[in-house]
Amino acid sequence: MLLQRYYPIVSEIQEKDKMLALSSSPTFCQFPPRHTFRFRVSTLVKALSSTTSADCNAGVRTSYEGVKLEEKVAAEGAAKTRLDTWISTKINGISRARVQSSIRAGLVCVNGRIVDKVSYAVRTGDEVNCTIAKLQPLRADAEDIPLDIIYEDDHVLVVNKPPHMVVHPAPGNPRGTLVNAVLNHCSLPNAALTDAEWLSEADDVSEDDLNIDVHPTNQSTCEETDPCSIRPGIVHRLDKGTSGLLVVAKNEHSHANLAEQFKAHTVNRVYLSVTSGLPTSASGRVEVHIGRDLNNRIRMTAITGNKYSGSSRHAASRYKVLEVLANGGAALVEWRLETGRTHQIRVHAKYLGIPLVGDELYGGTKDMTLSLLRQKNPCVGHLQLDNLVSSIERPCLHAMVLGFKHPCTGKYMHFSCPPPVDFAEILSQLRNISK
Image (cartoon, rainbow, N blue to C red; front, side, top):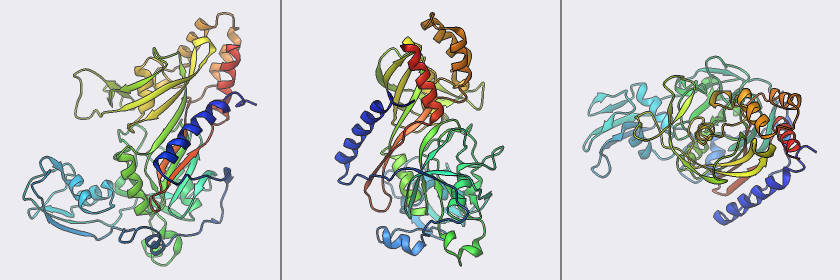
């Protein structure tokens, strides 16, 4: 089998993460075998807002529409605090994106004057009046797209995203996304992304800021039917070419809770990649800011030295070489994220001089990969190497492990899945070269 030699490595990583889960929480979540479903009529048990409230801790809101805040900014820790950040700390469980939507809608006043700038810095003594806005919809249609479901309950949905699927609608990608598939699975005929947050992969949005609510556009229908009480929310993203595990929130409380876990960097994420070449050290930690590449808007870049700007962000990743492939022409590398910046692993891999195989945007071009493989394997026929490289259609990156605390029960949940067939095939061919 293609993964026969690969599974011992996967098993070792899974066992380490199971021990981590067990040590951090008394409950470890075993999940059933994966299934691929294609839904015309959803079998999902609908979660009413009242049910969600009963299951979660008492007093936790599942809807924030119309919530009002009237409060004076205290002296403690108020200096240079952003308005959206300050408000989100005062309303328990709300996402910062929801607060930003209200600010931009003109529903926030400071000292009697409307402030529509989310980054406005509050000062000690400021009187802040805020009303949380009604969700403003941008249409996204449900589509009959198969979902590889790893786990599901009334609050969260964990899926194994295939490569080449965009996570959410964006200009140029309005259909065929994971959001469209989730809407169909939850039996919502059409829905919306709040506050015009139709983001593309090029948008520099870290997971600290990524809080996309997805909800029905037909509000009148929502008051009368069960399905509309479910509001799938995208809490984190995977790039279009990246495969693997992703969690979706089904209601506003779960959405806000998971967003806080990502912001606090307590979510356990392990990725596997195939890199061009080997890093200088077999394991290590990369800590370098990431910012927009001024010469190419869709690309991010490592910002070093004194070149930091307001748009660059701190980013840290840990890596470990699991297996040397093709006599050093490639490697199977594990990555563990400490932060969640746009294209973080891809940028850090390039920074280390080991771009991901198939990552044309960050230096892992077919020409570069082929040149290195030929250099390290002079006895291997050029046609064999040419066929291997030509079969690579995406960056070889897979989100293999995902662990988080359940937003309602607080129990630690741990999931893992092996890479898809295309990743396994490349890995197998590189291993054969090593023999």
